[in-house]
Amino acid sequence: MSARSPWYVANWKMNLTPSAARVWCEALRAGLDRLQEPVPELGVAPPLIALDTVRQALRGSGVVIGAQNCHAEASGAFTGEVSAEMLADAACRFVLVGHSERRHLFGENDEEVGRKAAAAVRAGIEPLICVGEKEEQREAGQTPEVLSRQLDRALEYLLDLRSADLTLAYEPVWAIGTGRVADASQIEEAHAILRGKLVEIAGEKTARTTRILYGGSVTPQNAEKLAPIEGVDGFLIGGASLDAARFLQVACPRARC
Ligand code: 13P
Image 1 (tube, rainbow, N blue to C red):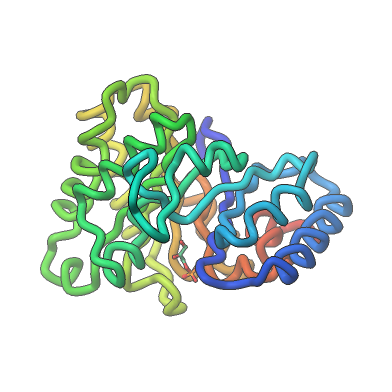
Image 2 (cartoon, helix red, strand yellow; image 1 turned 90 degrees about the vertical axis):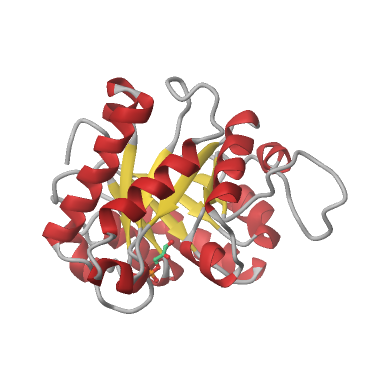
């Protein structure tokens, strides 16, 4: 990996009740206590209903908490929604925006992703912007243009790109929850496209310091091979993050967590 320190983020999606979340946090803390190597940078994005449980259970552990989604407005008549300001007040340090499930199951478009990213930055929390191509787009050779367009639109509403803290995640849609991990050359190429695009729209410095995570069927078994791929600055982990020990093993494959 590069000068950027790696970051490992658990995206629980719609899994784990608040009670199960507490058990998970205890298991994670026990694993961190046993760790014989430097503690990696970890983040966890639980369902909103478990956010406060996780915040309390992980207090002082150094693990940052985030959310899986937010609304683009700060407040208003949007029944069922939560704003970035509310997340900031609930101690969230980051929020996923543009996850493929939001885009494809809930019809979120590129513009909404951009507005949510800007709302997160305004609220003082880091947007973790997810991008990725569908299988048919890859087969049609459209991956570079899909990634470039998604990133362009995601950053469109950020007024001060040069000073915004953000993280990107490359998550090919066909690799999410399928057990089909992208291969090294596909990941390297996609991350290079995203970093090149960042240079173009946000400048060298932002491009150099912004982490780009890989997500899609990451497990403790494949993490050791994926981590050294050029341009990979950590992982966004779905299924394998539901078990605290497996999540920690992804971050430290050589440790006996
Ligand atoms: P899986 O790790 O279950 O493939 O999910 C990846 C993902 O969508 C993380 O955001």
